[in-house]
Amino acid sequence: MKREIIQGKIQGNERGYGFLLPTDTTKNDYFILHSDLKGAMHGDIVLAETTFGTGERTTARVLKVIERGITELVGTYFTSRSGGRVVPDERKYFCDIFIPFGKGLRAKSGDKVVCKILYYPKKQPPEGIVSKVLGRQFNKDAELSSIRYTYKIPEKFPFPVLEEAKSVAKPVTEKDIEGRKDLRDITTFTIDGEDARDFDDAVSIKKLPNGNYHLGVHIADVSHYVKLGGKIDKEAFNRGTSVYFPESVTPMLPEALCNDVCSLREGVDRLTLSCIMTVDKQGNVVDREIVPSVIKSSARLTYNGVGKMLDGDEVLCQKYSFLLPDLLLMDELSNILIEKRAKKGSIDLDVKESAITVDKKGKINVTAATRDKPHRIIEEFMILANVTVAEYVYFLELPFIYRIHEKPTEERLENFYAFLKGLGVNFRRKKDQVFPKDFQSILSSTETTPFYTLINRVMLRSMQKAKYSPDCLGHFGLSEEHYCHFTSPIRRYPDLMIHRILKSFLSGGIEVLNEYENLVQSASVQSSETERNATEAERSVDDYYKILYISNYVGEEFDAVISGVMPFGLFAELDNGVEGLIKIETLSGKRYVCDKEKYILSNGKNTFRLGQKVKIKVLGVNYGDRRAEFGLI
Image 1: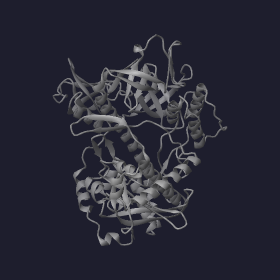
Image 2: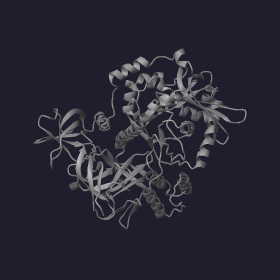
Image 3: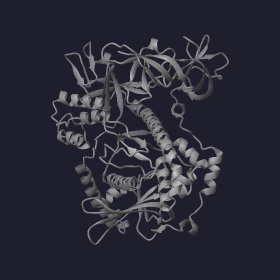
Image 4: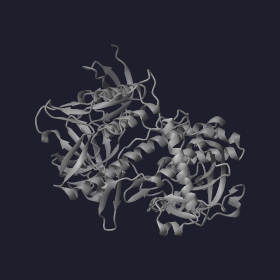
């Protein structure tokens, strides 16, 4: 076996070893022993050499650190005889940071701090200084601030950005409306959550004499206010997406835009980009028009209110009697679209999500997130608009940002099929091919079995993550050849870029599109990275709120499902999505062995598998690890 030189990024582990994630994504990851890291840390870009590992594990050793990935981190400060040290919150960064005397910014033991790393001495811990004290460890505000700093989620907009937003956030004028399709006389309305503050999509519908549906999806024209290359645009590019926490939102755009002139408020003229589709009785789009427009929303509805109206709530049905026929038509059309997507093989995973709310007194509540009919109506209409726009642009061969979801890798497929075989699930596999319909048929055939929840989880883990790309590679999960994100330019940068491209083309400026060739590449990469970072930040904050919530239930018993199988124990998840660790030493019996491919932890006598129903007792909360601890009953 020939040794190979590989460049990649180090992914650390709290136990001291690491993995090399090659820059060439076609290559698999490599395991690196602690002694072979040669001072490389989590996040570093390195040059490594492959080595001869034992068994099936591919291994490597670091030759050179090319670039340090983390130069600033958040952690807890502790004093020591020689000065102080910072224990990083990021467990993958397995080494404490040494803080010399006089460099601790008067931090006390137990303070959450921001630490800048200045030196990397050989065979010694990194050395740095404390640049900011966030507050006391375990204090809610300090913990939330530490997560913000860890994921570099900005708290405020730079002053020049706010000034530019203030200058462009003007009421709609007749000049703004010139050249737009005037839709102010038709009935349009928004449907959002109870506490939504910005409304970037409105819908309209009518039935044509031939039985077809005339569906309008009207999206706030953010590109009218945010010009390419301006201060707001550069800030939006850097942020990439809005970030949502239970008690706050970090928007992509300043409030003057996202909560005011770009928000489709009831009874106010608003500039939009409309995707107006004629949909037949089978759910096919037989005609479409994509056009800059102006609307005046007739009502601001909520998911909860629409649900009640569809169930026949007399008070609401009377109050919104002028909208009720439209809502019934939308319900009718969404059922057709749902059925059509199912026939195509769209994968509808039943994966549990949590809804976290905080009341005025600060009490946290965690419930299972609902995905009721009103949510499905809007979801189906947005998907249809996204597909329609992507198809339209694809055949025009314009530079574009697609939303892609590639099929699972062969390795993950093999593991998934082996897992199904271990469960005794019968399936027909096509040689060297996989289609969304294959996954859908597996789900439908196991829906009434005890393994259904388990198969959903493992299927999700076998898939690749969706991302943005200038190349149209299809969306495996939705079973669509063409897909994009067109419907949320207030909170997603790719949507804003798509609006610009469409408007440039529709205005006849084909030559202007040349400037987007390079921009769609950089925006795709940046938006994929910022989306991934935002998702991880949101998950970290949600997990913190969940442990605050479950800390009120220590000693109580709950039904749960095993959600993770590890060599050190089991993770169990409650019905509302709160997860906790059952340590292996608390399980009855000894010498447990973890089978990662079959998701089983067993000692021959006792066997635990992913998806298995169990009863647990809440033992406590480990605030340092931000993790609940359960005991198995």
